[in-house]
Length: 124
Image (cartoon, rainbow, N blue to C red; front, side, top):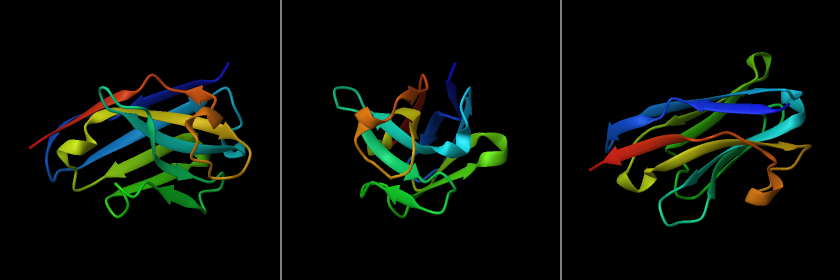
């Protein structure tokens, strides 16, 4: 069965950096678009960044563009999110998710393999 596991969350002061990792198993990793999503208390889950199957295409939400970098290592079945210049409004649970096939689709419901999430807290 498909398993997706995130790691790397934690607490950081505003302006700091964190790097999230996500390892997927039970699927052919390079057949899947991968994405990072986040959900803050009382808010809907939103897309943060997406990456194409081969890593040649990316999408970033406006709120993180220029500060976050998504990448993947298909040989290791691993997805990454480098987060720099963190702001308090980046505080949320961050989720990794997979979508079969091509296309950087931002609709959350299109992603059918989700991890449990990792908490990121940014203090001011």
